[in-house]
Every structure is written in C-alpha cells, then in structure tokens.
Amino acid sequence: MNANPSASVHNPVNFEDQILEQGDLISKKLHLLSVQRFPPNARKTLRPFSLAEVANYVGVSQSTLKKLHLDGKGPSPQTSPSGRRSYTAGQMLELRQYLDQHGRSESRMYVPHRRNGEKLQVVAVVNFKGGSGKTTTAAHLAQYLALTGHRVLAVDLDPQASLSSLHGFQPELDQVASIYDAIRYDGEKKALADIIRPTNFPGLDIVPANLDLQEYEYDTPLAMADKSSNEGKTFFTRISRALAEVDGKYDVVVIDCPPQLGYLTLTALTAATSVLITIHPQMLDVMSMGQFLLMLGGILKPIRAAGAEVNLSWYRYLITRYEPMDVPQAQMVGFMSTMFHEFMLKNQMVKSTAVSDAGITKQTLYEVERAAMNRATYDRALESLDAVNEEITDLIHRSWGR
Image 1 (cartoon, rainbow, N blue to C red):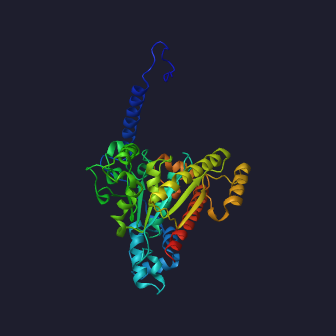
Image 2 (image 1 turned 180 degrees about the vertical axis):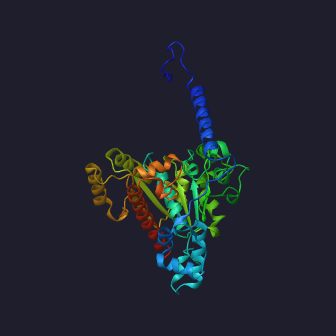
Image 3 (image 1 turned 135 degrees about the vertical axis):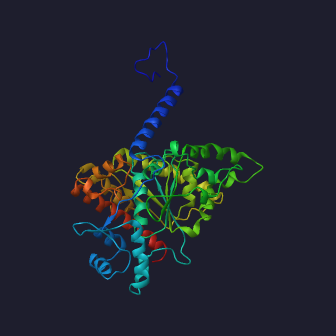
C-alpha cells in the first residue's frame, strides 16, 4: 500500500514509521492548541448557572430561590448589574444541603445520595460501532447526574480517551494513569483511589484513559493461559473488584466502553448493574448492532458458566443523533420500537449543531454558555439531553426502590 500519494512506487513508504510521525505531529499540534487555550498546569473551569437552570436541577421554583436569597438563607448568588442571579455548581450543592436540612419533611431527595442497602449503580455505555454518540452520551449523563446532586465516577475505558479529553485531560501530554493500572496482572497494580481525578464539575470524578488500556487486551489471554494462577480465569471480576475499593464514595459509576467487543468491554459489562446501548437509527448501524448483540450473547454465555455475575437491573437502547424530519430515520425508530418496545428509552438524543459546536472547544452542552450560540438551537438540544438523562436517572432511582 502506498500511503503517500506523491511517493514513487519504486520507493514505498514505511507505513509504521509514517503513522508514528503523523501521530507525533498531531500530538504536538494539539499540545500547541491546548497551551494557547489553557495555560500550562491550568484545568477546566465551569461557568455559573442561571436561576432558571438552578431551579431546574435542584428541583425548586425560581421564586423559592429568590426568597432564600432575600431572607439571607443558603449560599449567596452572584448578581449581575442588571439584577440577574447565578450560582456556581458548588453553590448548587450547598443549596441542596440547606434545603435538605431546612426544607419540608419529604425534602430528602434534594440530596439523592445512596441510602443504607442501596447498591452502587454502574452504568455501562456500549456500542460495537464508532460514531454512535456513545462518548457524548456518557459525558452528558455523568455531568447531569452530578448537577442533580449525585456523587458520580466516570470511567473512560476507551484507549482513544475522548471522554478524558472532554474533561480537560490529554493523556499524551498529562501522563495520567488509567484504570489499567488498577486491573493489571503484575506487581505494578495501583489502588483505584490513587488514579481517580476530580473534574470541573463538583460531585463528578473521573478515571482517565490512555493507550496503556490496550495492554489489557494482550495481557488477559496470557494470564488465562497461566496455569500457576487463577487471575486470568476470573478476568471479568477485575473492574468490579477495583470499584469495590471506592464503593462508599459514589452513588453512580458511568463507564464509557471502547467501540469493540474485547476483554475491556466484557470486564465492564460484568461489573455493570445496567447497560445503555447507543444506536444511530440507520440501516447499516442497526445491522451492525444486530451482529454485536449476537456476538455479545454468544460470549457472555460461557463467561456466565465460568462464574461471571451478569445481573442487570435494566438495559435500554438509546436512539442518538436522531433527525426527526428524516423519514428513513423515523421509520427505523418505529421499526426498533415495534421490536424492542419496553427496552427502548422513550426519549431520543436529537442530532444538533449545538452539541458538535460545543465539542469543537472540547466542551459539553452543560458547559457552554447559552449566549455563545443560537439560543433556539441550544434550547432544543438541551431539552433533548435533559429528557434522556432524566429518564435514565429515574431508572437508576427505581433500581434503588424509590
């Protein structure tokens, strides 16, 4: 194969040398852009939230927030020269604590943390095919859960590290550890607590990804073949055992799985209490998902026979990048709804330039200022995101018996 269009057929290009050179070039250019946008050692910040946003996420009326402020109760919001009030995400957590202690008797849901006997919820977001909106879904779900008062751990299990990048981590530059360091088979294994990093969202921590994650795919078959140890034979327990170390610190774990059916994905699925399968409603994507389900079912059966616990509270299909005015897409959604019915989320993640525009600056829609883009486009996209995430949050709460 001649990778360089200008290269002579008599002087073929060494493919691996060329891609190493190009990969290095991309990293250097990204580093330059990063330094221009974020000074060295800087971390992402988070914008303040308007009174309407805070009322929505906390679950009170705007008039209640105004009265609290006028009475000098709870955290004091920032007030603009025009009189607009806003709160930081940290102040939203303070508001929850205040309302929990001084609100009505049924106000315990202002702080929706796990209670005694409620199990840590681990949501695995999966798809065999790239481009299904898997990482976008995982990022917005984790951030929404944090904004609504939950203690959340996001786990980036994809060596491409897109979820990490959205939260301000560039593995090729920051040299962050990944969950590989907590699930590896040798003596270099670390405690998961030492790998977890805070994000710019209060209440949301992350286990970043890096290319070392791919080593797990090579290490596991070797460990399974090692007759002197049982570690490889129970590879599917390694993520659940790592998460058990930090069980008491979180309410929900959101895992962004790699777009392939390998040992990492299988280990995540056996750690999961619920699974979210993202699907773009086009024929080739649905066909690919059908093959994915057949492969997954065929692999999980022998793993269960080997002792794996694959016991889900729920699993759902989520339609992503949906264009309601696209007739073939609408027909495909109807086709899937007929087949899967109760396993489909009622809400879809609509395709929006607002989400892609935010992604250009490595931000999510929850980070972007509404005034920074077309407001109608922003509002439609946010309404869709909130509806999906609220439905998933309700499933999580129902798993706790609420």
